Length: 80
Image 1 (cartoon, rainbow, N blue to C red):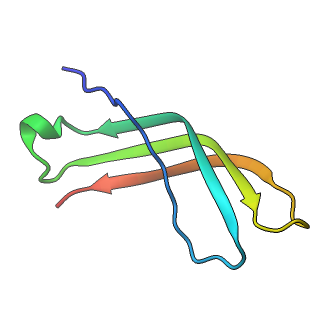
Image 2 (image 1 turned 90 degrees about the horizontal axis):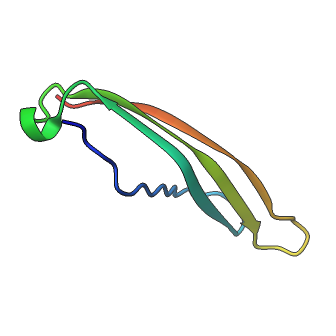
Image 3 (image 1 turned 180 degrees about the vertical axis):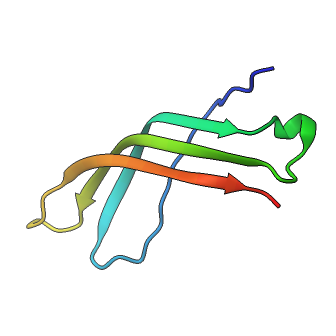
């Protein structure tokens, strides 16, 4: 049985100086798990995920230009 991902949303909060707005656009999301958690539970569940996309940064100042940069994020998952 294959599981499918119906929606991916990425948001990041920080306490950076200055006012700016960051908008994230997810282009790809990959999730790999060692088993189906809906059938076998989450005890000792392991996996990894990666997200790629773009970040649009809108500065809250007339003298700082807006820009875009690549979003690359990955992490490991382990449930005890």
